[in-house]
Every structure is written in structure tokens, then in C-alpha cells.
Amino acid sequence: SRFYGGNAIVGAGLPVAAGLALADRMRGRSCVTCCFFGDGAVAEGEFHESINLAALWQLPVLFVCENNLFAMGTALEYSQAMTSLVDKAASYAVAAAAVDGMDVLVVKAAAEKAVAAVRAGEGPYFLECRTYRFRAHSMFDPELYRSKAEVAKWKKRCPIASLTKKLLSQKLLSDADLDEMEHQVAQEIDAAVAFAEAGSDEPIEELSRFVYSAGGR
Amino acid sequence: MMSDTEKARKITYREAIREAIRDAMHRDDRVFLMGEDVGRYGGCFAVTKGLLEEFGRERIRDTPLSESAFVGAGIGAALGGMRPIVEIMTINFSLLAADQIINNAATYLHMSGGQFNVPLVIRSATGGGRQLAAQHSHSLEGWYAHIPGIKVLSPATIEDARGMLWTALEDPDPVLIFENTGLYNLEGTLAADAGAVDIDQARIRRAGRDITIISYSASLHKSLAAAELLAGEGIEAEVVDLRTLRPLDEAPFLESVAKTHRALIVDEGWRSGSLAAEVSARIMEGAFYELDCPVARLCSAEVPMPYARHLEEAALPQVEGIVNLVRNMVRGNG
Image 1 (cartoon, rainbow over the protein chains, first blue to last red):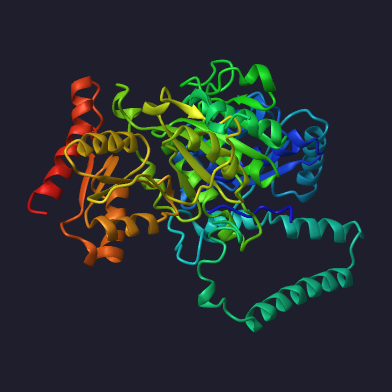
Image 2 (image 1 turned 30 degrees about the vertical axis):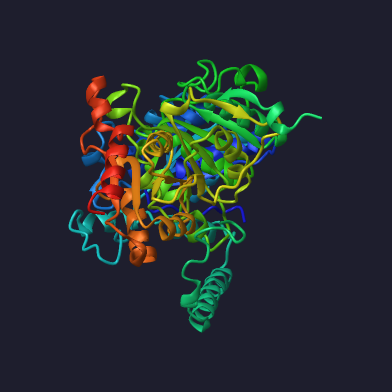
């Protein structure tokens, strides 16, 4: 697998991404490591340490910041004195760009450009995608920190709805195509849920499995 | 033909570690070293002196003062197929990377359901006795011994300084090696063909019948010196070197206590919640009915390590303290 998982410690995935890229470079592999995180991670020391290390060693990493304006319930303006994240990244001598994260095609074009630059050996790249979190942080979040009107305003710019509208208007997609895609996605999700619910729980005897590698001590 | 002992050469603990790093770098091109001042400076404690010239900047990497980033990068590089040796200058600085060590390195294998193991080795200097005061001298390795998912080594001898690294690098999981700053200048002999040693067994360093002294790292040498003095008084102490703090190899000290019926633990960590407390608990669980007197512990005074030499000496376990305790335990009411 090339997917190294998420990280519940905000920012803690960035150093690991730098290390994966370091391994690629030292082994002469032409891979690009792509690391996703939110605006909250930019407040962590690990962001600053990692982006500096990646720039210093010219590592092939694409840092993608999904700036959705909220770190759990704290808005960017209440946690950062300098709210331009792309400027922070640029200060480490890293190629950096900020794009409208609500426009799928803009993000695609920006990501392709960024990956090409990283793959060409130009060092790390920072891409800030300016977006918004529609839903609550978690099931336990009553969303006291923002207004329903604000959320509704952003929902009008929903990237999926916007792209769909554009594709339909340009006749690149028909209503039937759209129904078929939505049906396929729903089927895939239903199948995954059914698979999980039909499975059995892990045996208690395996509680300590994978604490250390098999054959390890 | 000369025996290995005849071929043995004089070497310091510091040189033995350097030789282990050089050997690993030659044996496996996936091995590289990174850390603060490991290259141009030659290592804060001169362990890595000359390695930059020999192996070049790609494999001997000076890092910024970013413990979290370069330890995390070590984890990433290990996931990416390398065999990194990450040097953290002192154990106090390892706290700046505690997130990466405890939340990432120790959990990756488990959280990924066995998909991703982390063959990372971290080396760090620990311990007091060099007047480096309260932010460079603590012995926190007992804390790391609390964490499932990592292994914690504590080489006290030249042979272990030389031999533990390769075995650690061959281990599929993260291994932390804590080198005591007070041992870097320790001189000893090493067989010409010295190489890898096990990293999962405690060792009896001195045989005895009257009491078991359980120790590790620099305290081992104090325990052995005390045992030598006690032998002059007719008290024969058996001295156990734990070597590996996690997983703890308890059989040797439990068997020893079953023979001597007394146990003293000497540990440079603070007493409350210490590794010494863990060893003591294991003795209670595994050898309680063998005991002729209560288990005793000699640990560091519960103060931040002082700078002044006389105060630092008073804070650390010393030979005299060990001798006095043992004498009381063997001859006293025990």
C-alpha cells in the first residue's frame, strides 16, 4: 500500500511525510509524497520544522493544506496572528500557491503543476486549498462557534454541486450519467457497510498482536 | 594462533559505538545517521567524529534543531525502506520528539493492523555526573520503558556499546538506545572479532551468594565497584545488568534473588514511578517468598539535577551508598 494512514495528532504526519520523501530520494525512486493536513496543523511546530527540513534537503514532498478556516471549533483568525498560510510556507523558501479549494478543476490544475514541479526535482511544494467545513467537527459538536447563515452561504459554493452544474451545462455529463454515477457510489458504500457488518469482531486473544512484529521480540 | 583475548584491543565506550555505526554503514547501504551536530561538529560527545568524512553528507546528516521533525523523518524513512539511526543529543531533548516516538513510532504497527513496521533506531545520551545540570543530565529511559511498541536498550559495557546497534538495526520495530554520558570515556578491551550481541537478555556480571544487586547503565559500574569492596568484608554480591529495559528480562534477577534472598536495585532515575519500582514489583510478584528482607532501592535524589559538583554527587547513587545499604541488609536486621 502507498497510503500511510491518517494521524490523530494534528501535524504529526508532516515529519513522517518528509521521511518517506527522504527514503525515496536516497533510494533514487521518482516517487512524490503527498501530505494532507488542515489549517490547524500550521499552528504546530511540526509544520514549521518539517517544511524547513523538506526545503533544506530538497525533498520530493507536496504539502497540501486544506484550509477550511476551522481547527475543531477555533477559527483561523482566533488562532493565527498571520492568517496567510501560503506566506508562512513561502518564508521557508518553498514554492507555494493558494487556490480556490471550492473549484475542483482549479485544484486539479494546481495539483498537477505542483506534482510536476516536485517530480522534476524542484524540492517541496506547498499548496493551500481554501475551502470550508460544511459539517460539524464530530458527532459531539453542537457548532456553537459559527452561524447557520455562514455555513449556508458556503454550501452554495459546494465544489461537487458546482462541478456537476458546469458539466451538465456544457453537456459533458447527462442526467442519466449523473444518476448512474450516484447509483454506483451508493452501491459501493452499501457493499462496504454490508461487508463490515457481516464480519466478526477481532478475537480477544489477538489483543496484543501487532504491538511488536511477528518474529520480533 | 592467538586467542581472541590476546587479540583484544583497548577501546573506549565512545569508540565502540563509533565502530558499531561504521560497521553498520558498511554492511547495509540503507543505514544512515542523522541528528544535531553529528557531521561537521563530530557529535556533541564526539561519538560520530570522522564519519562525515568517511561516508559523506547523504549518509551523515546534520539536522536543524527540530527533534520532532527529524525523529518523524526517521520514522518516515524507516517506513520507506531505510534503516535510519537517529541521534538525539540528550535524553532531555527527546521530550521534544516524544510525540513522534510515543504517538507514531510505537503505534504504527498496531494502528495499521500489521501493515507498517518501523525499523528505526534512536540513540541518545542519558545520565548525570558531568555537571551538565538539570536540562542535560536526567535519566528518563525508565519512562520510555513504560511504552509498548518500542524496545529500550541500555548498554553499560564496551561489548554492548559495540554490539547492540547492529541487532537493533535488524529488529523490525523501533529501538531506543540510551548511552550514558558518564561511560563515554570508559576504557576496556574488546575482542578483535567483537560483533552483534543479543538485545533481549539480562546478564549476571558478577556471581555472588549474599545479595542480588540489580542495575543498568552507569550504575552497573558503581554496583560492581561496591561488590568489590563488599567482597573484602566477606559479603558476596551478585550483580545483574538489565541491559534491556523493555522488554524486561526478569528471569535472571528472579533466579538470582531465589539464590541470595536479598535484592537491591540501583537506578539513576528518580525513585517515584521508576524502573526500579517496576523491578521491585516484579520481585514481589515472582520471588516474594524467597526474600529474607525487604527489597531496597537506591535511586537519584528527587531534585532537578544540580550543577555544583558536590550536589550532583550527592544526588546520584554512589558506591558508598550501595556498600552501606548492602551491609545493613546482609548484616543488619535483614
